[in-house]
Length: 443
Picture 1 (spheres, one colour):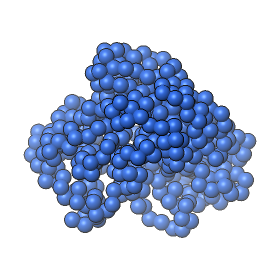
Picture 2 (cartoon, one colour):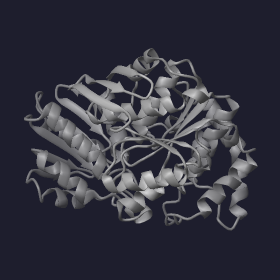
Picture 3 (cartoon, one colour):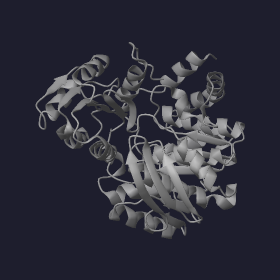
């Protein structure tokens, strides 16, 4: 099978003409069945499972970076991808090679096809990807796999694992139509990754979510380590170069430098360190030097990422209120007072009204556009929402034209921000970095 054929097969698992499958226990049954046909590779893995509403990807990448710096062979699976499908399956800090991905698809395809005859239907795109990641990591005999949860936790495809540590990053409102309308309901779903007698590393949480996590940990007789109580993050400097902080952990104190923007990343780093310390008796202790090196070299594209300085150009996946709050706070702290031009696109399935209310009042000019997705919110509809907060709004459905118009509106000392859906931000990041016309490369 060629790499192109492998991508066509995976893309064929996405059916835009069908409603989302229900959030139900059958999802895990389907996943266990698929893995069983593949020889249960997940049972051969040591893992860390990372759930949350905001910061779970950043925290997962940090955990993987620290452990790699200690010399361990680490698998990492994250979601979604920006422009290249292979971002979802990484080994030793590198994306899976194209040939290896094609081989994996060949290996899993019969099992996926077999699922078409079952009552619950075939595995989804996400379930197939997760199974492929587990199979690849088992074949490559990783020391540990760091796994980012997709939606929720309890019924997510990743929750077939028996993680050594469950990590819960900040929990807030997202996917409420699936997870529930209250923080108690949402935290209950995300806390579903906590195991009996397990270990939990948790970021600071809203009171309602924290109470739910604490109850779940107590019910499972799991050890809960909480940033802000058991682990302390002292943020010392925040700049366009990143974050400097000192983390007081369970086993030591770690002065760190992060090349990521926003003080929230210091808290993510503290959560990552707590998780690594909880792993010590299973994968070995991690030195302060490994913590420092792993965090100093972490890269996480399109998360308040500065890619140019004339004008200051930032791309960010601000697709839910928690993400947009982090972007807004970082902009105000690091670039407040400068003229802001916003290029903005959202999906209609997201809470675009709340997100718009958070970012639009900061903007001097806004260009709305339509992301490349069947669930995209039309540029004109988003523009009407933006006009509640600022008058200078242009709707350009063509994404490339919208990005170019945003650039034209921004002077050399201004701030240009491209944010919203990953289906916009991933493309825009490539265009802005390459500075030449580009077709969509989202695979």
